Amino acid sequence: MDRFPSGNSERPEHVDRIQSMKVFARVAHHAGFAAAARELRISTAAVSKHVTALEAQIGTRLFDRTTRRVGLTEAGRVYLERCLECLQALADADASVSELTRAPRGLLRVTAPSDFGDCLLPVIAEVMDAHPELAIDLQLSNRVVDLVEDGFDVGIRGAHTLDGQYVARPIAQTRFAIFGTQAYLREHGRPRRPEDLTAHRAHRSKLSRSSAATAAARATSEPRSRPAARGRARSDESHRVD
Image 1 (cartoon, rainbow, N blue to C red):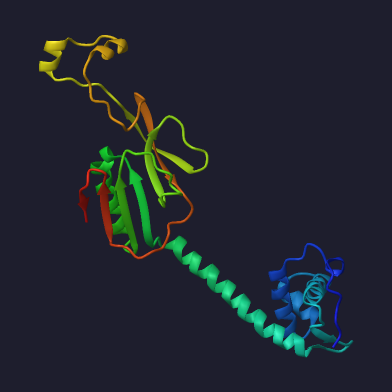
Image 2 (spheres, rainbow, N blue to C red; image 1 turned 90 degrees about the vertical axis):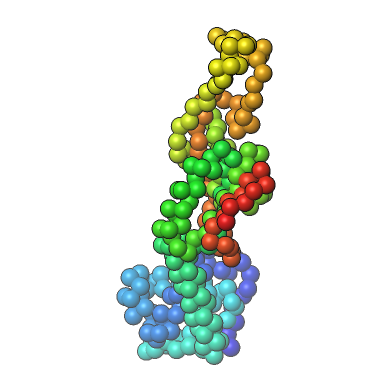
C-alpha cells in the first residue's frame, strides 16, 4: 500500500476537509473524476485537488488510478464507509437545527421587572398559543441579573443605554412620573422644582433612576431546549402563578 508523508508541508493548503469528503464520495460513486466534476459543477483539477488533500491528510492512497478507470483501494473502501456516515450525520445535524428555526420549541427563560408582570402575561399567553411546543418561564424581579450567568434567554429592562454584549432591541417607550395623594399634598405642600423633592417623604421604585427610559428586550443566541412546564411566572415577592 502506497503511503504519503504526514508532515504539514506535504498537505495542500486551504482545502475544506468536509468538502473534500463530499468530493471523494462522488468520485467513488461515479468511479471517475470527470463525472464527479460534472455533477459538482467544478473542474476536474479541483476534484483532483480535494482527493489529493484527503490522501495527504490520512497518509494513504484512496484510489487506484489508470488511464481507463478509477477504483477504490482497500483503505478507500473503509474510508468511504466512514465518510458517508459522517456526511449523513452532518446532514441530520443541519436538519435538526432547521426544524428549530422553523418552529420554536423547548424552554424560553425570561426575566422582567416586577411591575411589568400584568403587561407581559397576556403577551406570553398569546405567544404560547401560537407556538404549542414552546414553554416560557417568566421570572419577575427588579434585581440586576446577568443573562448568561443566570441562564436567561431574554431580559426585559428599562434603560438609557444597552449593554453591547447582548443583542438588544427597543420594544417600547415608558415615562416615569411623581404622584402624591391630595391629603399628603395639603399637609406637606406641592413640590415645584426637582430640588423640592429632597424635603418630601417618597417611595422610589428600584426599576430605574431615570425619568424616561427605553424598555428593551435582550436576547442571547438560541433558546435552550429542556423539559419544562407549559408556562410559569415567578416573582421576588414569593408568589408563583402556573
